[in-house]
Image (cartoon, rainbow, N blue to C red):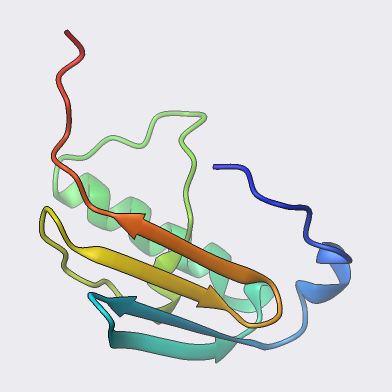
Length: 101
């Protein structure tokens, strides 16, 4: 996904921001952290969890570390919103995977 440019992103990396996640309008996780402090640890956790579940993360995979606020279960049809203070919001609707055919 590509969104608008995040102004002064390098300077923001070390500043703490509020990050929250809602599923179907209900907040399921929130944290105040800096991306610099926790994003890499979250990616390592996601990588290990994915491997344990038999899910590959091949080179070039886009990863958003929503794991900063925890792992949140979703079902097909659910709508999730991730809010990054002062940066923006990401809205996702969970859909059934389409076959390549």
